[in-house]
Length: 130
View 1 (cartoon, rainbow, N blue to C red):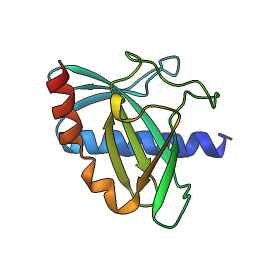
View 2: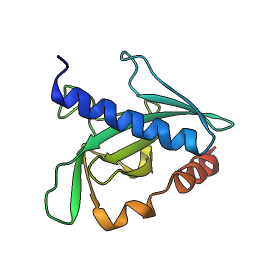
View 3: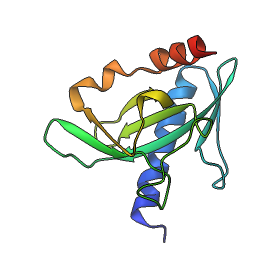
View 4: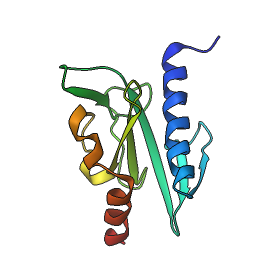
């Protein structure tokens, strides 16, 4: 049987792929040896790291660990990924953040602000950085 944490992570990855597909974007889940979870083709390629959580530090926000798997202090480096997809599984919400907006190894998103971090916003930031 698969560990609970892995099942939660896979559920988050499927939710992200579902949203991308609903927006008529081509995406594929990456091999587990990659430092990212999903590769997106939106006219360019983007590496997406999915972080899934239900953990609340308070009733109004969700806390995410954005360090690399199996390491609390191993932060992602520039070039490892392009986007974070922070998934609040219970709320079925995704906050899309470019790498530069998610530095460090912890990120907290207010539940009421998930809608502010849209996929379109994140992709427009990526395009403007090219």
